[in-house]
Image (cartoon, rainbow, N blue to C red; front, side, top):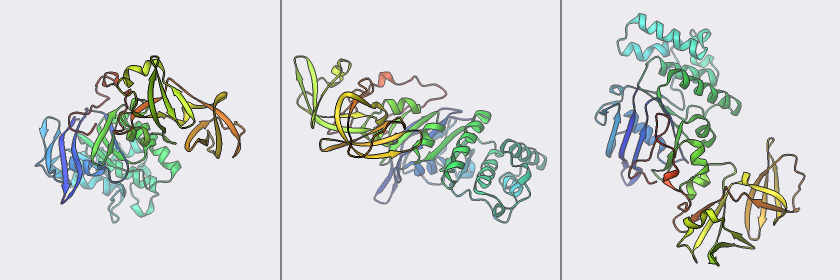
Amino acid sequence: MAEVTLTDLVKQFEDVVAVDGVSLDIPDESFTVLVGPSGCGKTTTLRLIAGLERATDGTIEIGDEIVNDRRAYERDIAMVFQNYALYPHKSVEGNMRFGLEQQGTDDEVIEERVADAAELLQIEELLDRRPSELSGGQQQRVALGRAIVREPDVFLMDEPLSNLDAKLRIQMRAELNKLHDKLSTTTVYVTHDQVEAMTLGDQIAVMDAGEIQQVGPPTFVYENPRNMFVADFLGSPSMNFLEGDLRREDGEFRLDVGPIEHEVPTEYHDALDGYDGERVVLGVRPEDVTLRPDGIPVTVNVVEPQGEKTVLELALGDQTIKASVDPGVAVTSDDRVSVEFDRESVHYFDAATGECLDFSADDEPAVDSKSATVAGGSGA
């Protein structure tokens, strides 16, 4: 087992900076998820840890050793790829044995490890089959088994569930959680799927444009975004943003947002001090927009039944917001309804920089074996 530490990590391809000064502490035994949109640098960061790419600048430590100059096979890591990368001419057992055989591991040890991994992953009956005879989920398990038998310090996983159908992805997420609980191996996992990130990670690192925007336990990051990018990326539907002019009258802050005047709760006054007369963005998540007879009048544009919830697209003046409501709510397009914002769950953002004005680093959970921190130049 080992902690992974990235310090001011940079990767540049000619004139493109794919990873831009990332610093991140990944505690021993943690399950850390790098999440962000395509092209944000998450896979490149993983490949730098693996030794499949060479860093332009910065350091990578695994355990207490800097491994920048070590080749991939010299780092005690095992990687699971998006396409599984199984040898088609080898059996399941042959695929799982191969890496250990290349290392010269004793045959008795290999047999024991393969048997243990096969039992853990419930693929004992598949050991004699070829990859072409397996389903996608079974191939996924074999790829995991090949990594497990290595008994590495670190598991690296690059979107390993993306080729599976939705039902199987949900099943495999649960299996990965159980697997990590049993093995407790430090794991770095890459995905663009925010649901995977939220359900799998002890901590998530949200990336954009080669930088880490925020790191922390999933629920904390979701409820306390550092900036508009994080607030917008996490959540489905994403956070509503309403931009307006902030003014202070008689000691109270009010935000003019189109047809409504939003009264800022007293507990946010300190955070907004100095923004009188400035453009400020009000952020509220769809689940914090509720139907209330005496609330803000809006028009229903679209009704989207989604089983466990119904998403309403609502017209508020010339702006559009979304609300997640109970599926039993009887509304149709063009209905006039009224809504209310949960005043304890709103956020305020600088309209120019996107930074969350009510975020406080003092509120972040203490760092322990199950959480990570942003360290220096990571773009947070």
